[in-house]
Image (cartoon, rainbow, N blue to C red):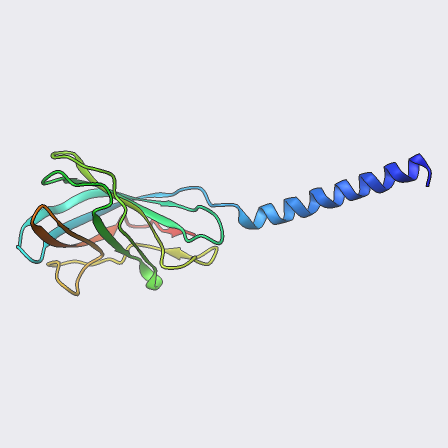
Length: 175
């Protein structure tokens, strides 16, 4: 085979490999993070302690890329009532369409710094292009009426904090 034929075959193989790599890279790319304002009223349903009334917060999405599930982080204006060890709060965040983010992931926190939860993963990978918002709830938080749940058991205290709330009007997350 002549050098020109070898060069042509080599160039064709390189172009084909490049095209395949680009096609596969497009399916695994992650979406950019999105941030949405939320308002929460949070009460420990065990003790009756109110931690926030119409408190401001921000939900932030992240996507590590397929096949991993997307994640959600909640940054709130709720001050930490005591020193909170890392990864000691179990957080569940409910979205429309039956989408749930849940996990035991949090940074260490000290009073009076605001509580940050997550990023916690979705129960499974959310289909590309799916739009959802925080499940909107109102009234008194209870065992069945909540959008965000925070559970903790440390320092001799068990807390089951339920939050009612809503996402800012006209905003959605697109996964």
